[in-house]
Image 1 (spheres, rainbow, N blue to C red):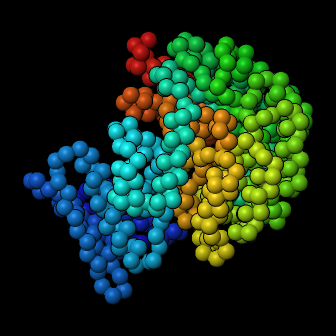
Image 2: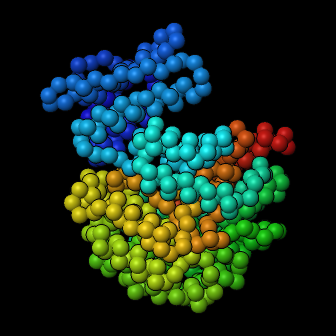
Image 3: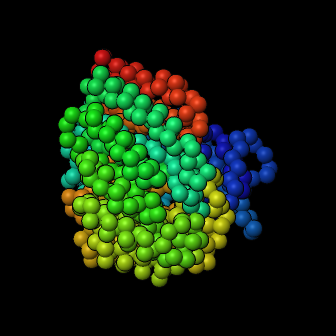
Length: 491
């Protein structure tokens, strides 16, 4: 599908709105006049107004839409994006019969968008008019985002410019899931890399704390993710946690360890975590169907997931998150609902429900996803059932939300929690409220100045072998923190 862009640079929004109606199709964007196109967008700026034109080729002819946008006033670019989005939405909805639940809203962080309007003084009726009217968002998705924003305002303390969180990457897994796009290596193939990787990671962590101390930063949360951190042995996990907590001199708000794969969990590892002040652990079934687990390449059973949950309770964990995925290959509406009901029987404090999204690096390809979606996976109904069961019946509240590209039905991922058990790192990171410092392969240090909505990024090398071979460069990049906070505080 070829999109012709003339007279403007708003291709990002146009591509994403188009993709929401044409999942799986390759979109090509061109910027010079030519006769071969499927969609043409044109903007001409006049003295007082800009004139926007959309042409869409169909089998029976060309559909034509146009808008006029005043040049004066604030957020001119956004008003033009919205106008193009509305025209595309009207055209594609009429042509395809598809009505995306998120309308023309294409951003990763719908709650951040909503929070910005709230901070500018918009009340709930004005927000509803903006999102459900201008952005074409469905009332139920607006309600979900608005509830999430309200919970965040209730649980977060005021943001300080020196607040930071720490993310530590353990990029190893027992096996690679079919849908996975994370930077992770199978432990079977890469076990010789684990120990040298850990030794260097501990050095990077130590350097990071040197910078935190030097710059007077305040560490609020720690998140150890991956990969699957519990691929480490109990002794290796103990060394990692000892290195972190030896440098922390005040109570954290939260420390989370991903124990996502039940086939890597045992009581000894959980007890090691409890000896250190790990406050939250993730035990992620994704599904409790053994057949679907086999389909996606997870080498554990539903029974192992349940056993791991009980081990975590036995070890003393009172804040456990469990991840589920709506839209897995071979799953069904009834199967997803049965999984959610069984997870609720366990009574975890947090339940995070993702919609299946697969990136180019995953083994499961997007063309397969579209086929699954079109046939047997009513993912919208799965997510509707989630809200009914968790929010309507079981006392959970949505507390963070994000969206991804290449997601079935263009839907969302939401974390739900019992009041008082919200995963604070998830909110800080997803809403970009303060700096997150990344350590380890594939991690990103995201430096945030919330006053100016300014974000700078520093990337670590992606793969464990790259990380170990280029460790001096990793250490050098860490000093971008000094430059950023030197400018911020004149250190």
